[in-house]
Length: 184
Image (cartoon, rainbow, N blue to C red):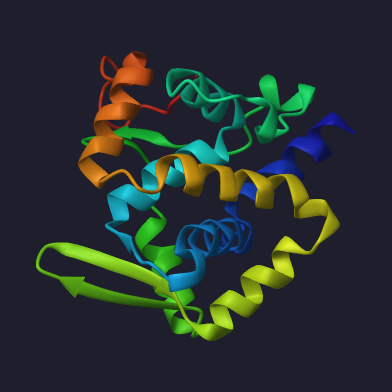
């Protein structure tokens, strides 16, 4: 029974749909009423780091002097991290971001435009509709609330400021070797 559960969890982690759904909700929360783009894949990765790891979101909120109660972190989430990120040049990173972005663009849910050296990402109308449908799902209510919290609290920071904040708040990331899995 335990092995079957581990295998089921591993399959879930490898399923692109789970990650694309989370990114849709994050991008939708970041967009606000003006459909503001996320400026940079690295910035998206840092925002998603806080969304994917509720225990890290809590620590980041404390570092910002914000209350942690709105994150609605469940007891089981304090000891379970269901997804992997690795130490990369600019902090936490999942090598699949460009894949997920390409899939979302291919499905007509996301626009991506290169402006200088920055990739700007924003949802299409269909992407907003899909994100709203996900947000209305009872099983995703905590994730949806957290996406809004992450966007409101950290979304106005530049990619560089967010990277520096992550390094300052999670200094153990700095001493990790590139390519090592992050365990916080």
